[in-house]
Figure 1: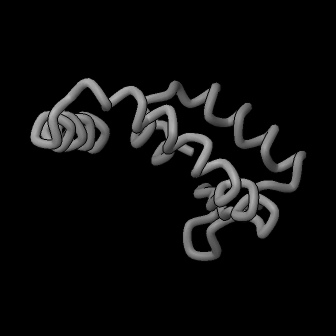
Figure 2 (figure 1 turned 180 degrees about the horizontal axis):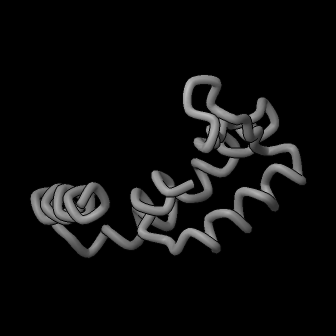
Figure 3 (figure 1 turned 60 degrees about the vertical axis):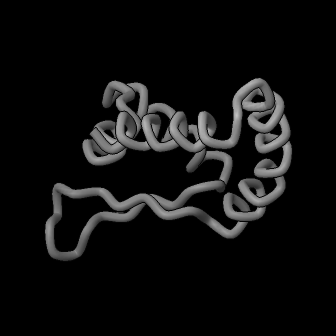
Length: 88
């Protein structure tokens, strides 16, 4: 959970509640790491992967619309900067 929190920059308790909710809906699976017992590993369930694939086109369209005012070079720069921010 701490890794997810760090990568998403979302506070730990919110990540935990969100993961709990997605586990309840059978979109994710949570397991204890066999080599590091305190560590919890989160995996996408088949249903979660299917939902992700179906949502991707619906997310891509507004993204394209939002970037339409930018040139290709500006859009690449923005994506690169956002990736840098996301990876810290």
